[in-house]
Image 1 (tube, rainbow, N blue to C red):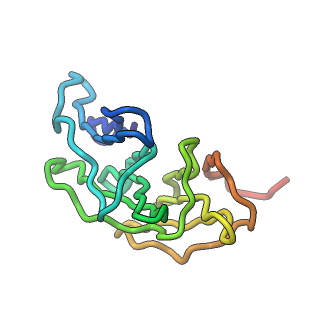
Image 2 (cartoon, rainbow, N blue to C red):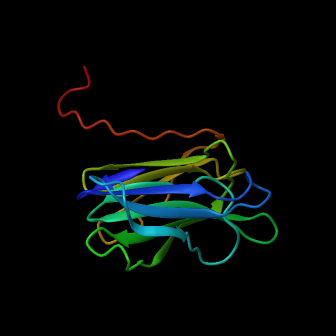
Length: 167
């Protein structure tokens, strides 16, 4: 769930639990009334099947829904769909964050908005290990950084915005 400018964006599955029949959707609600501004809508991707829980972030006057896509042959990609807060009926473009992911139902990717960027980390699988990148205000992805050669099935990302020494 993310909140921006009086709107709430939520993601949820209306089908059976993954990987049987996933049917991921988003809705945008008025924060004051709880009424739908955008009725339940399928989360679009650039092909493949979405299996696991998407995450939504309020970022730079838009909602960014980050989700997995599984292609034939079990390869995964991590993608982001943008929805402008000022015009939520106008769904933006899809950005591929990584085409080398190994995702699981436990939450093997996460992100945080900080310092004008959306920072993301995910399990790249063997031999890539844990990876990270950020999206800038224009949804342009930074270079992917390798964090470790180990893998993670449960990922959590946070930002340390303190200024000063590390003491």
